[in-house]
Image (cartoon, rainbow, N blue to C red; front, side, top):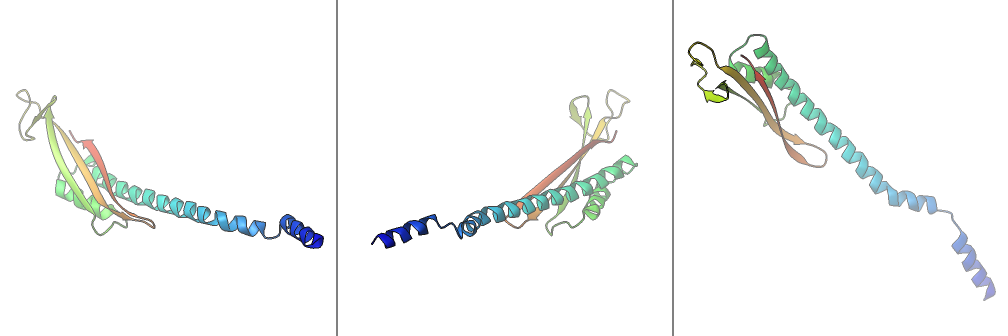
Length: 143
């Protein structure tokens, strides 16, 4: 009886295999952190590519372009690895001071209104863990 009790106490102090059990318990946490990290990096990369396309459309206006459809098409072409549902829209607005006005009219008799362009891109991001809708805008004053 004493021998069985002594063997039982010795077995409780036996620490072989504890590292394997600890590793098995922590492994799911490590894998989850790795997956979230990769997924986050991929989302940031997709957003960055979307912004690069919008910047190409903005550069079109800054170099003297004035066609809104051409700017949206240029932004779409410059958007590398865009998703299948990618869309780029361009909208124009004009202000005389703070009042919205028609872009063809004059302010105060002989002054052109301030013209603004808003390029907006949207598309789906499909990552390792989820799918998310992304939208980015780039607003610029053209006159």
